[in-house]
Length: 284
Ligand code: ZN
Image (tube, rainbow, N blue to C red; front, side):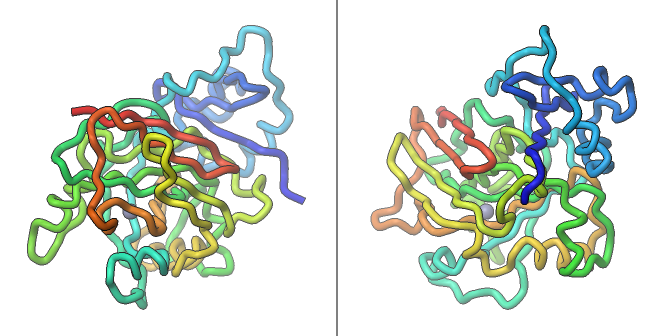
């Protein structure tokens, strides 16, 4: 049986617990026991969940307003991303299935909350729905068997990508083309891993102006979440609040025939059903 859901939001850099559609300010309600910094809460997430499951919303706790939220983690120390991690996406890109995870970084200044505008940097900006892993206690040299213990939860992510910038260098370097302002929406919040029926099989979708473009399940990943966490932790010490964009399934615009990129005015709707929905407007 999954545990009751714990969801952590970021409002103006302060951790908020969701209860009955309202937000409980964690630092204030816990009388400083957990502080208000989302990263500190994530680093002590098992104890936090124990406390959170005993809390109720009170009169005066504000309603959740998705438009006011910041990215689920405002200031991760590391922001990893994985390329070509779904078989159908590797096939549509005409590239061989990798034998080790293909890792790049997004820079933290690209992070955005679950609502807002995304400024198009060119006429080759594309969408990528992704499951985002939020590191809890983290660590180094974590085995696959224990990898999920290092994870606090998941969030919905969009790995917005300017394909011309991404592939413009030889050899290609992905990071700049995926790190313009607003190119990393993550939210609405962090949902505790232990509250999910099956943490390795979640449906994920991306719609552009109401037309479904991506429709897959995380069970189709080439390297599943435990493998990714273990692999990354062999190279880098994972810290509380670090994020891993775990790769996108098939259906991105750049491999459609004809190629199809974001246009100003279009609505990008990104959903992972048990986690939530994000909506962003592309602007000139
Ligand atoms: Zn991606």
